[in-house]
Image (cartoon, rainbow, N blue to C red):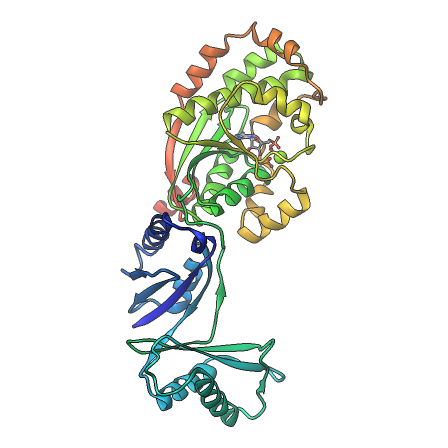
Length: 402
Ligand code: ATP
Ligand code: MG
């Protein structure tokens, strides 16, 4: 039987709610392994224990690396509580890894079964000495070892672990409640989504599309970005908001340099309605202070004026370069980098005001049937489910032909 021990991140600081956090994490792991194998998951106070039979370690390791809430995890190997058995398993584990010249090691023993015949220091010495005999070139380094072998003596058996993997950290998926992500096809919004997923938020996606002015490829791009985010969460609801009529109305009623402000205010009105409908708690977007004209303090406060809903802007202080680095790391870069333009770019004004005035904006809005336009857009939203294995419709159709 294969085993992994998961060490919690921040959730280990939780008090009475700890069970809820643990259950969310277990539920998420169960979801991500649903088509692979039924794992046995045992949540303990300080760690979570996974057991399974068949699936190779690499598969489970890759899955756990995209489960929020995990600080680190280790494959652990049970062995009889006899020194010789522990030494033999320790040697086997070292034989299974590649050792380079100059590598060092250290043995750390922990003893929760106090009746075990050896003290921790003795276990360390006996196992360490045995390994040194087998690998005379392997240096002992107690401060910064290349390899750390942990021997844990527990009631039922001894457990050994040699390799430790970092997790995503943060909080379990969904433990912070649900939000709606304003997802464009750009670089910022998927990263904003990743950041709040990591803090335990479950997300639904909202994408404003303006066909025929925007292309089917632009829509596909947003869907494929959703699929990448779904890897860190579960299957996600994707809402496509028809936005062309609103953009045409803005073009007809609002001067060019204020159109961006009005457009964003209308987006937020729609978001607010959806928030209630979907029983979500917060709007999330990819705004970053000063990045573009609509993201100056003046612009953001005029845009924000239409709603009392909670708006989270995880990237507000993050530089574009750092956003790009993260996009490469989590796998959204190559998709965001595709050239298809979304609704904001197609209708982008030549020189948007960086300091729009609220009363002027309101005067122009008063000439538009905003409530009807908003209601109409919300009534015509198309929603679908997208999971991490999402295949674009074109590709799926093509595959069917083969
Ligand atoms: P991104 O900011 O994701 O790179 P962008 O640069 O095209 O995309 P901005 O003009 O910076 O978009 O818009 C700021 C934020 O507004 C985006 O991060 C996103 O949250 C939201 N937004 C913009 N366009 C859309 C859209 N078509 N659908 C949904 N949300 C959008
Ligand atoms: Mg942006």
